[in-house]
Amino acid sequence: MTLSEAANVVVGVGFLGAGMIMKRRSGEVANLTTAASIWTTAAIATAAGLGREATAIVATILAIVILALLLRLERHVARRRGAADDPARRGEQDRDAR
Image (tube, rainbow, N blue to C red; front, side, top):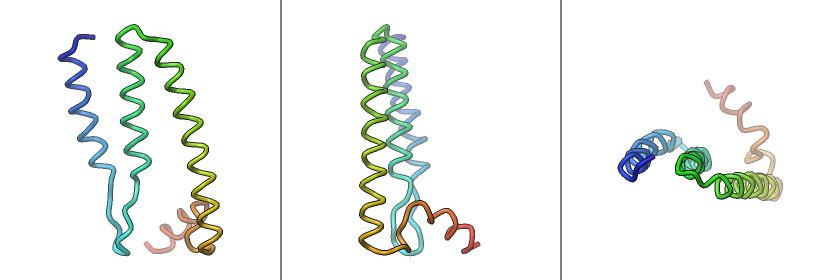
């Protein structure tokens, strides 16, 4: 992978990530973590494509750990706020709103 190919990956993934982010009617911004995860995956794939397999493996493990910790934090905050913000129930609420 050349530097110009890596630059094209950055541009393309930027558009994908931006397309994932939505603002709900309540004013809440959604899918930021999904957009960041897409960006992270592209960075890991670029590292692997450049021959930096060890960097890609460490980054993958780090990303999984961080996402797991963020999920626990989100659930903790949701419990403190009340069941309406619980990420485990959010899919049900979105389905019911349709």
